[in-house]
Length: 97
Image (cartoon, rainbow, N blue to C red):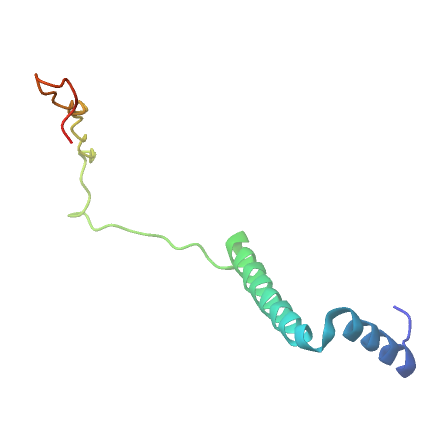
């Protein structure tokens, strides 16, 4: 990486300030900090998942082991109910309202 002189750093900061404006710059920095924090935690979690931590063994007591598999109950299916039909009057033949 090239060595940056103080005047170059000031110039870069001035361009960033002109592009984003004074009002948006704190929000942009805050969003960048949150993104980096989330990224760091995800990388750490991925490293833990890869095997850096010892695997946990789950052991059951002999009384807890059941040889019969558990089958979830099947939900009852009902037929859809037909929509009610509007009644008509014999005099006019129009639907009641």
